[in-house]
Image 1 (cartoon, one colour):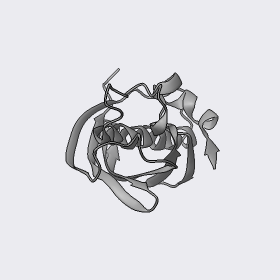
Image 2 (cartoon, one colour):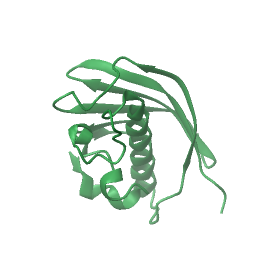
Image 3 (spheres, rainbow, N blue to C red):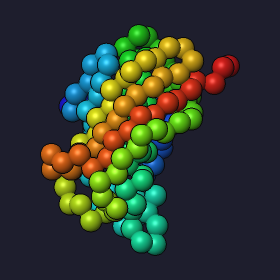
Image 4 (cartoon, one colour):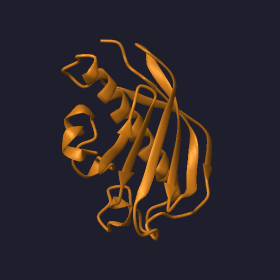
Length: 144
């Protein structure tokens, strides 16, 4: 397992905005991360009514960022590469709020295609073995 301290310097998500607690597994095309901060009353995305499930897309996007950063580090990169989330598609949410779900969120991302200009992934988030969110996301890497 990789702890947050093993990847936090590789992604732009600093402090409490780094939503993932660790990485259980990853390979050339996929990553399985975990998080427990969705129940925190100080969660940075929490609103007056709690933490809406739409924010699970951010968990998926962060898993994508960590995956890309781990691959880049493995290839010898020494600096994090900036990326910009530009598209979410086919997002399905099976719950309304996530702050009421005790325990661990399992965040999975699968790379569909990636090159120097960006990447496209599918993601899914599970709670206690039940899929609660899924979709596709695209990120671009701005030039220079």
